[in-house]
Length: 514
Image (cartoon, rainbow, N blue to C red; front, side, top):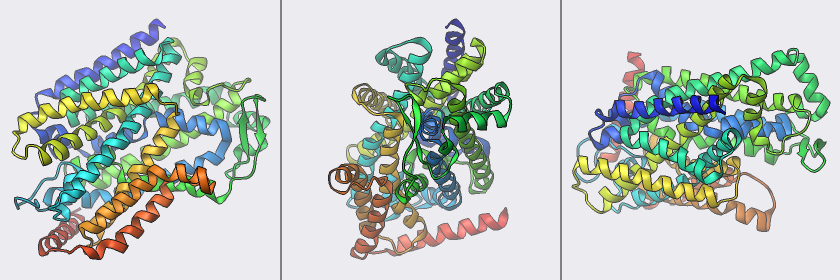
């Protein structure tokens, strides 16, 4: 206990110290929201990873593999493909377009700081509907997304210190809010680098120790197959029966489960906290290196997380009551308390690295797309900076309430928010960057159709359809249908066309220069 307390304490002090270090460099709203667009390749790449994978990587994915075997890995396959696709398709154009797009109200380059402001400027939406609807979607879904991290945080503090959820969440939220309020985007990004290294190292160390203890990969494979022959099948067919205390045969995975898993990958095209890393990178020429670093980390980390799930199946004689705790349980069983404290801190790092990014984006939406856009358009940069800091606290408090009084797992909460962002923004953003003839009407229709379907799909499916399909897929399809069906009701102005051509030229010049 003392070793874990000491390790956690040192880690939390370092996080706050980074916030203090960059506090003096955060003097404007632009610094707080995007760090002045000065992230280098390594920081941008690793920060995108840390802000993305959260407690899902170290708790949710190993737990899912532990329950059902390799059939749950389709989600990881979809995510790997989607992550690579977002760096290739979205990152270059979004980096250039958000800076170069003409301000829809004042003219000149807008330097759009948020996804909502970019969409308004990209489509010259003088009604401000795009900004308002997108900001609402961001805030609503981030309450659930941040809550998923806090649920994971509460489970970790309970495992290590025996704390009840309320004090555990209060401690975690306090630290995250403190360094986020102090340093904004730069503090979040720099702490993300440390957190990404900790997460990957923990995922490597535990399998090495466990496989060595079990006599190699052969011993691991034998241990897994002893619990159930179908656990190593990519088509599934096994599930943990808690009452029986054993893995039992189920139906082989159908197309619905596989397609639902792969559909997770499209979510990367619409996650604001990841898109912010694309917007904040130093130059479009830094993107290929950042993308390579980021995708290599993501693929290897997910492969290790899948391996952890299998190790848990083989290592523990008695099935765990809480499958999402398989990684912490392995850490405690395999390592010295001092090492265990460091590795468990990596799980806390995973949770914090996503929660801080999400809090920052939600606060930016409230400030830039709410207060500045609709209340005080001439607000001083310094005033906006302090309003953003206040909204970070407010969002954190509401998310903590969702985590405390909700009754869902980490995986459920992440899946809900992931579908909402992926379908609400993914199709709209992809076409906004690549389709010159897209209009604000099409964008608004796609955003509403995708976001609304993600919200209501599970209710409709369980009550009437019974398909079991992940909400992402129908929500994305309806979003694209709405965009193409209603796009003709708007118009493309000469300025919109000129902006699009200007961005394409700059991207091509950057490719030739590199």
